[in-house]
Image (tube, rainbow, N blue to C red; front, side):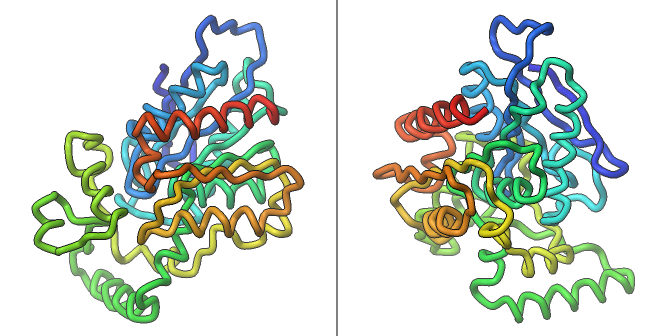
Length: 302
């Protein structure tokens, strides 16, 4: 594994480049860009699980930290901006195009959770991407619009005004910051409970995934639809993976929406029995099934 940097606008995006065993620089390899969930980082499921396993199957992989997050540059920090997240993919493709051992006609993307929604959106307008895989893809804009979008926009506007007048930025959290906070909140939804177990305990906790979100930067997310124009522009082969245990984050229904809307002639959805959203991040029983399907999909399409 090599630590690399590539540009998005004026800042560096941090990424891990993995090369398959027996790598020969004189040969051409298919490559897969791996994108992490919202609030996550390349050190967690997208890199250490999915990119690692796809590299073992013979692919060059590039797992990156989103701009404004993790080890990547970009100010302000902790910003979740859909347009920038999508541009990260295009810049990742640009970087792969500079590597003489990457076959420019065999580049795919794999996105997990919110990274899957962003990956689908990027594939629509960057057709250098030849195949799209998603695991529990979530449409972040849909999530933001549920549960009072207009009230959220009012609150964001007030916070932006306060910051324009000199107030400190409001940095909030995506989820309860500890199992103790989760218990105090009384949350019982499987996605919320498992998110805290994944991100805020030794199961997968990382300093590059600090559970911080800049509240005043969220207007664009409220108006974002990751699947907008999929029925017109998404023509590449698509492999979607979801679990059949639905939770509040909605990846089960988002997976079927993407499947139904994609214009792609070659598209498939795998529903993994007994798997919740976060089971497909790191639980071998379910991840193995996802990777068996994704591995054969990318070998067939790249």
